[in-house]
Each structure stands twice: as C-alpha cells, then as structure tokens.
Length: 97
Image (cartoon, rainbow, N blue to C red; front, side, top):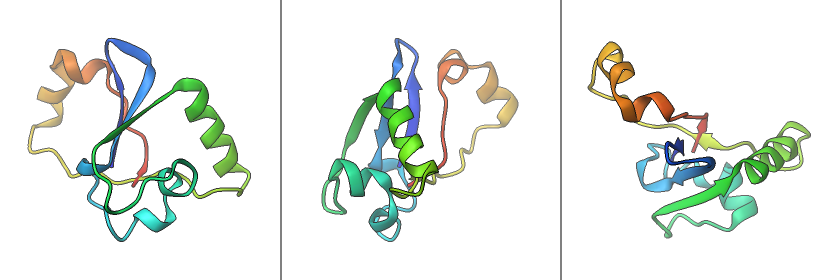
C-alpha cells in the first residue's frame, strides 16, 4: 500500500493497496482492512481526507485499531533526483500496508 498526499488535493490522502509490498500478509493487521473494509481480494486505491487520517491515527495511537501498515517498494530513482521532481515535492508517504 502506498499513501501519499496528492499535489492538487492537499487535504486528500491516496491509499494505493496495489503498490504495497505487504499486500496479502500485512492486510489482516492494517487499519485499512480493519476499519475501512478493504480485503486482500480488493485492489485499487482509496482516498481519505486529513480529518479521516487524523481520526485513524488517533484510534491507532490509543490502541483501538492497528496502524496503517504501509510498506512501499524502494524506488530505483536516486533520492536527489526524486527530490527535484515537482511531483515528489508535494507527495507525503506515511508508514505501513
């Protein structure tokens, strides 16, 4: 699962389960599966806004649900090059999948 803030929708977070390297074994203990009802069979992306993300973080911090388990593949692009790209400047990745 990959999570990032879309540059043109700064208050929306895109959760891309297809890009998560933990897809399958990590799904059972991921907040997306537990709270939002995604399953291993379901693929695609999910968008949540900042308020929803904050609510999920608060639930996870209090131990009520598992945290987002995003693990994304390592990019083959050099970090300095990725940092210079306009798309990379506004994207924020958060942990687990």
